[in-house]
Length: 349
Image (cartoon, rainbow, N blue to C red; front, side, top):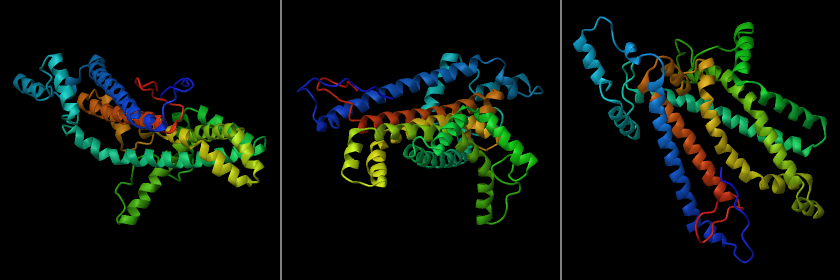
């Protein structure tokens, strides 16, 4: 996230059209260059780390009964006979073209395997984030409007507790209670095997399998949203313009939503983009615990099997999504925050 620039000297403030015109274009260019550099570093580390891991990944693709000629041919097919510097160049060129090669373990194109799992990850994380965001904001506004009451104390305490509990621990507890002791929900998978016939039955079955993982993500993250919204609302309600609005005779609802809540929308919009990387990176744990057929679980399985193409492809996709979310958060904050100023000499945001 960008740092707010120091206030300009008297008489030297840049016009708003300049801030959101050429100067904002320079700001975008600067953030774009930063993002490209970070992406290059991540891709390079992605190549190095998997090759420094202990063990020999070649064993997973070579059959002991193969002839030496067949083993050499298979090594050549996967590019394992090339020197590291050439492997690196081929790796960078392939990733930029979204060509991840073939999986060592399944012999299937990694790109196709990722595309098969991507909708499941988007569905799980998107639905969880939507419910968490909307519910957390409403609860936070409610708590701020009743400052000092028992309900505010309850929201604050439960929010801090939910935020402090490790995600995997809560998810395992939910599986144990509602999947084993009270077998209400399924404990694994994205759908029943065999899947139920009919479109509506298939949709309901998918929702049935979504309930536990989505509920766990909502419980884990709703405290953060509620506490952030509450604190922002309390700060807004203490401002002079709120006192003025009350003096004008506006009712409680108008002061709360038309003035206080609208003033905290910019940081909340930025917070949405900043929470997307956390949700994406957390998919590895959630999808593994619930055996969800998604990108996070695919990445973990590829790492455990030392499947270089699969692990690098999944890691590249997750890293790219995180960088895009951070980039959008920077651009959004640079647009909505009036404290960012761009002088005639260049970007100072």
